[in-house]
Image (cartoon, rainbow, N blue to C red; front, top):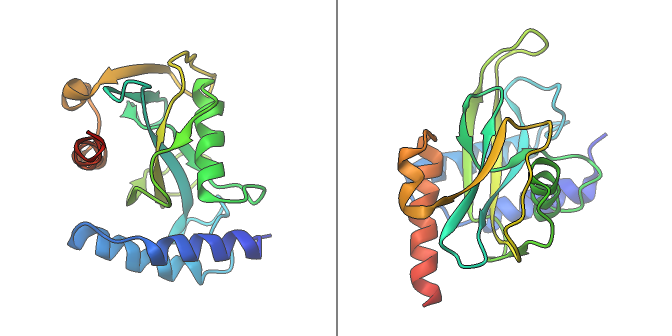
Length: 188
């Protein structure tokens, strides 16, 4: 059962999000539509999909990004996963996923609200149909860099920002990297 408070929080987060381009404007519109679905967080809903939360985690020095090697998708991505009805906020869901996948606790949000949004396809598997993840992404800063890969991921590593494009990630991470660079320039 969807938590009304969580659903309201997600709707408000999406409404406050300022898209950076036409693509994000379309994502935002689709996310707002999903907010009206009966079960927008249910991972069993495959048409069109469901909300997820992920985090771009910067090292304490702000010069490396934490990436996990996703077992099912076979590429380096930011940590993240399904929003659970027990999560009070998108930030709580993203931090929980970071800790579950990498063992990293004690992260602090670098911005208020989502830092990036994305809607991406998830291929069908034997136990579930193809669907989409409506991903709300936050920007976090780690207090230390001690990480360990959980059973949920194939590997975890800190990648220097200038090496992100070469590690085998996807376009959405590369797009977020440009936003991270802009954010870092604003911190100086």
